Image (cartoon, rainbow, N blue to C red):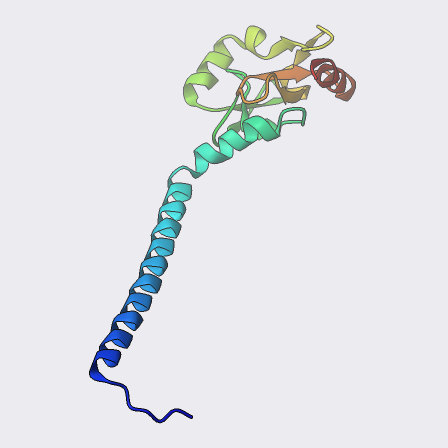
Length: 155
């Protein structure tokens, strides 16, 4: 064992070294906290945008839920659309403006051609898929077979 007493200079050097270590760990801790806080705030602020961008890519080639589509504008939405029953069929519309347009132009808006076969189908009975990866435009399909053929031909 070394029972030698430290000189005043050695004590000062040791305090300086310990202060540097403490300041370094404090700086790292606050940096991590700052980055974490900013990340959480960004996710909180842009959550809808991130979820929408994810859906545009991840749902390509998959069946899109009808609640996520405005059947009047044929686009994928940020939020869920509202369910409306018109002439005993269920349609999903995003706003009052779209609903008014839908009711005024029912024959033109409620029916569309199948994206693969070209058959005319009602949007309420159709399967829905994304037309292109990363784009909000949707297409409608008569059945699962035409749905699968469309995406196999596109890849």
